[in-house]
Image (cartoon, rainbow, N blue to C red; front, side):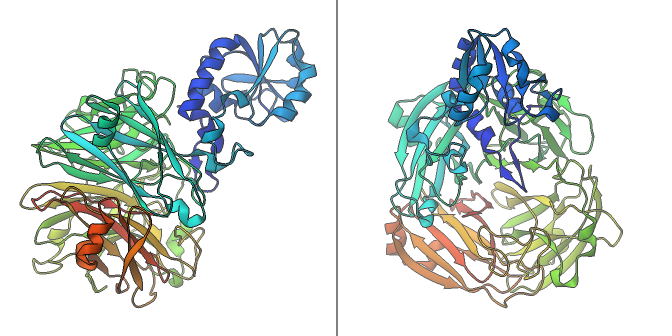
Length: 628
């Protein structure tokens, strides 16, 4: 397990981790360790663990602390010594493990061993023009970064779509710095792009990148760093994968989630006629050693280790059958990632069609919460996990609940299915599902043929009629299959309490505001290459809320100009399918272009949505939307 702290739901992201793991910092740490010789580390802020995990080549001869209560503690594999002993160290260099360390360095100087040089982490800082807040290095806005699964291999291309949503928070002059890593981890290209000056749409297509830099076929990962941001320190995007060789493959996924995790879940085992490939991408400048990663059937407790090294920033296509032969859908797989990778993609290959989806972070900090069993009536059905039921004339919709906490041994669930008008058409008790289960549900098996012919939605809900436990981190994998073409898409997400004025801990929540100020701000990309975009918007409510939503759809172009606004109304607990070509004038959609987008805005409630594109020939993509 890599000794780093990344993210937790109470404190948010660990900025020190991002500062040390940034590819530029990794290069400078490598240079520091190569020239420093024997080193004594002074650790005033308790960051020696991640520092030495991300810079293991340092020849550390002693680690020193000021806090007398910390003396003797293990940090980064070393027992901490009192700072008063530093002058006796036999070292070439003293490394002060702190940023913005000028004053502290001055005070440390009299304690240095004879002849030892003093270094600080200021030597591994990003260049000034990469910093949004130059005067405060460990400000989260200096590290608005993410990774992107990026390839252009002659068969598939990838397309990142986002918007300059920081402009809405007052940011000016936002720009993107990129580092493209090849399959083996080498840097293929580095460049900078300007974001739109206003809240405009932005697209980065792998075909354009390949042409721009004269690259051959590649598969790897793209590091993206947004500079000049405000309001949000997370880079959010939608990523399309589409065929360039005339094949029918098409899929989309959500952003990569910039924080590595010990484990990930929601990885499906293949059907007998499928191959499931997990794209393992090393997120750090240090090698992942053989045996550090493993796959396990969820709930089996028998992880199988991957016995090969993965170089810094390298990408490995791991066929899950290599480690877990004979395991098939609806079994699901747990990925023991050791905090080496951000949220990975997986690829399902079936016949001539390939689809991409992502796994989710499995929480190590959650335990069962007995308060969820006794939520008051004011919170209604409590935690809900909504997902679309696509039009049943064309699509099959399946749901597989996925344990998403290491302590989750059982999950008592019910499935509530709703029509577009908000009327509940069926309740299906799924039981108290054990961690190792095959509890997939085909929505078609629950409904007559003529019910929800044009679609609707369903919600997973906790149901304690036969006992069980809950932690609030309910997740599911949703698979949508075209009944004629055989094309499929899948998505996964977690539960929230939706649209109640009363609160429980940090629920309900939205991207901005607290109850009763919940609101919606969702991003819908437009279609490309003749493919038409669509989305399903769901108005989930744990308890009765406003009878109908007041939802505005705002069409923007690539420069941030708003071209048109349309209004729709969704019944409480209802849903609607939206196609921009039907909502807006054709001339405005054409003017918005492929780099434009739709902002879905509602100040009366929080909506939840899934988006995709349809190629008109049986191919489609579908994943949950993001907001800002």
